Length: 63
Length: 254
Image (tube, rainbow over all chains, first blue to last red; front, side):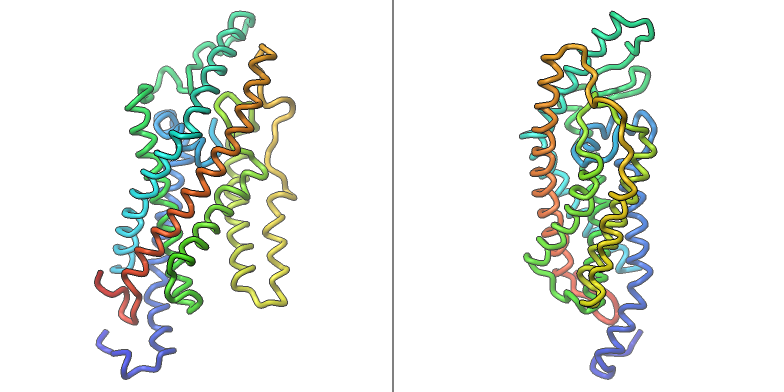
């Protein structure tokens, strides 16, 4: 990627940034969802006991 | 994948800050109420077990299952609360930063400053606390509630639907903004799973009155705590994002 913003119109620069950023941002969204599941929803007793007060504070459904 | 790696680092930094703040705020209002409710829960269970054939006397404070590991009350329990708070904040920060970046790319909020951070934090508070709390009010330990999986599914429906509604309100064309009412009200029209009968089943009427009072305090305490936590998380995420502006080649070096 050697093109510079000086030689490209702003709109095409923005379009390129958008297409390049879509996958990493979707990946971040997915990872965030998995992490929230682990912290707030994982049904195993150990995960529940460790995160108990945090789940009640975040108003995740608990018990 | 530079943007992904950078997002993860930024989310981690924001989560450590917000997780610590939430843990400290919890000590002021939320945790003492949880501990008090657990005392009533234990007393109620013991009393119930003494007078009932089908006792659940294996229940321990905090619904911890005796057979399974649980942190000891005190420092260990606070440590795991800090860990879980930071983990949840990490998940929320990842989603928040992805949304802030998407807003930048859409050209709507190229430079989210402190006002932008507070606005994003408010959105997070509305989506992840206020909206689900309307159907499933903050729960104290010992409260009788509907089936857990049904409540979790409704929580998922409510948060995602409210998020769609907020996007439509902010980004939708003026004459179509009213369509946001559909996802906004849908989860509440579907209705959160509710339990038939009282939320507290403590045999002592005095304890029951105390539990209802504790529950009202708990709703306020979690509301104020979550509002401050989300404002701090939104501000932290925007501050971190603003330090590394996007360019055509991806994020600039930090």
